[in-house]
Image (cartoon, rainbow over all chains, first blue to last red; front, side, top):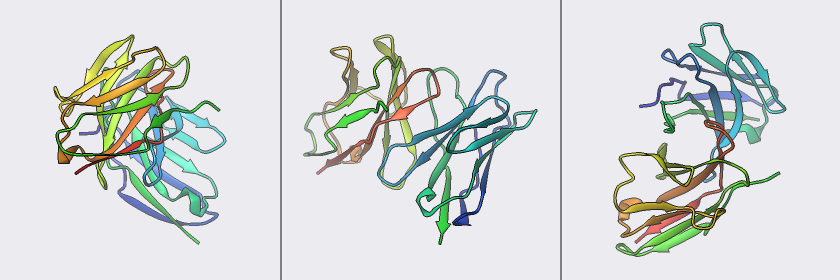
Length: 109
Length: 112
């Protein structure tokens, strides 16, 4: 089982900011948090990775509170093309990676 | 921007046949992974490869599966005797460092 918990689905409208929160209560001290996006019939795409506080790139921002037991992926001004499944991952130990079910984001016009 | 490539994009095979799925990782990346995703289900970890050997494998990765990096660039997944339940998308991922994964477009394997 994945070490993370996310909402199963979210709906939004074009132009809105979307925040997807992930719980990872048992995150280890040295673990990074990584988010991926997946469109149907495509491989997951790396979005952003962070350890603490805030990380921002051209696609998204990642907010991590001081206790690091959760993280929030923020997508500014979503468009229809942001409709996808979003995965939050933390390391399982060693080299293994476990994907959960992710959050299915549906952006409406 | 460098990308991971995979061939073929779609492979149809008969049950019991051997298939080889190919991946060209991003140059200078150090870690290589294979995943599969059965239609409508989660992405499942199969195996990781580092320093020319398997570093970790899942319960799915049994004796029917093998991986190789034969020439320092290609990274292959072989399924020796395919079963109907092997039908899935197979994704290769290439990593410059652990946990930052760059996925290929996948190979759709259909076993009939």
